[in-house]
Image 1 (spheres, rainbow over the protein chains, first blue to last red):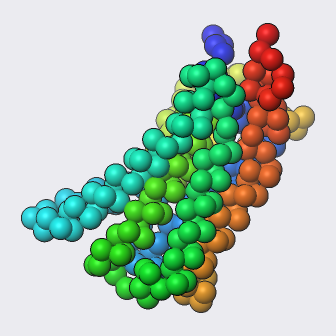
Image 2 (cartoon, each protein chain N blue to C red):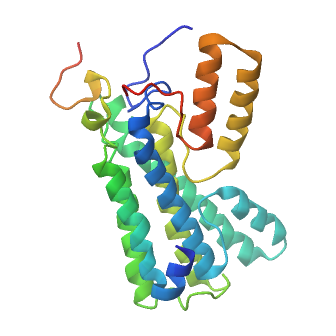
Image 3 (cartoon, rainbow over the protein chains, first blue to last red):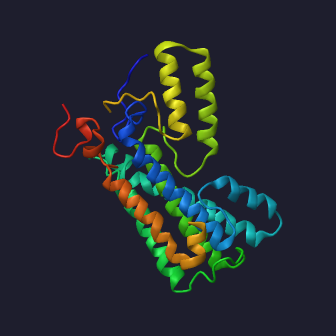
Length: 211
Length: 46
């Protein structure tokens, strides 16, 4: 297999992300995203870490222009969050400076703490109310921005090998790598299985213990 | 998280924030991950 150097903004290449010593870190990122998604659902009956649900809501609400606009703002917030991650990672690398991989995560932490503070102060209304008011969409947009920031940071830092806020892509990759392993043998099969495990839960029994 | 939000309200969003801080503490930066020297602060790229 031909090996090329990862782009300068990459923290861990696809191969470097496989060892077990990074498992806890990646699981923590995914657990944080899962907690936010569950929290958003508990708070106002909407999922917020992946855009498929939001885009589906835009379609479901076709003709109800205000609702479509509000869900579009949630979608845009996710995209803006992803764009914001570039400032500290690719943006710095392009200017010849070392990327600050943790900086966008601190940004996500700040967004979550702000959400908690505003929610506790009563700005987002009571827990469990369905998303109907503009303030609920402000709540969802804030969280979506943080999740865009988090997912893009994980993706950019691992050469697009790891996504932490949604399962569709990783589930598809898991299937592809599993089927690839079926057709291969030797080192190629081991590598395909490692990649399948990375997508399937980041706990590979075949990862060398020295890592 | 789901039941936690029901109990403590929006303040529960501090929990995922803590998880992210632990992830950073566990090494979401070049030195801890053993990333290439070009990404480690203070070590010039050859």
